[in-house]
Picture 1: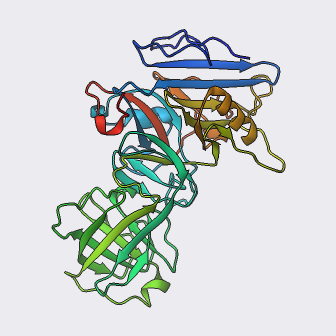
Picture 2: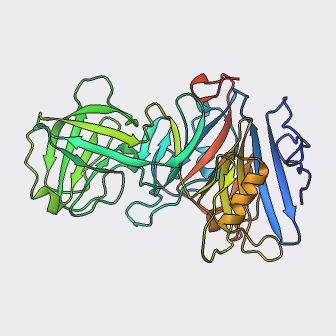
Length: 377
């Protein structure tokens, strides 16, 4: 069932085999191709030694600094060079399809410490402030506190409902792209912790302007709280100079997290593969998993009867557990399922080419390790 790892063009090959050979310490990572011809399955794996403090995880967005759609190659190219050298990446979260917000992640996205997208209650993956990989369902407690002490929940960088509120930052682009309603332009209230917006904080914003129109401009110094027309009709009018508090709490508390991405469902918990009832279809899949020593980025090709038929969730969960993962989470699959290593796509995408996606999970090698995002050896 297990094949030896294949040489990787434009990068070193470690010669490890799946399951019993350790990642060589001179590199700390290995690319492995596992083929099960009798099914058939074609599985592509990038294995990372967690004790290596020079290897870190980051995320990317479809349009670099803004929400959008882009291939992994395009996203990785747009990453700031100061983050390190990209070694490998997989496609990230599922994404919503509102044409005004292409590439809006379905769930939580934190990129280089900046909150890009809010949690929606599904499973998410993150690196804790202590440097540990974590995964569970994350719930938003995002809210704005008005001057009178009342509060209101809000979404982040997404389509705004007529009876709801959404906070927009420059991570969504040059403007809010909304129509109608009321938009409150907020500037720094001089508390020293304004932007970029981070998770688990309360920041103060001063009202610069209130507009009875949509599509307000955005820049790196402002936020825009947009109220749908039905909500605006029953919300007290604010004057310029009023102060609001923006609260970005989550359950569980993710304060200090600088890397996070949504996905789901959970595949493995405490070493046990999750189970599902009912009919399950085989599709291309992507997953992230880990044990105490290693982290794994895994892609399963599918929808190609002569190459790989894909996996069901139970099959993927069992595979991740057999790989040794104590915890594992599914990411977006189907035509999005992609593993990029050392500058090239290693798998066979089901649509015959790499499909643009909303975000990606990236392994980077740093010249100067960032201790705050790595587990201490």
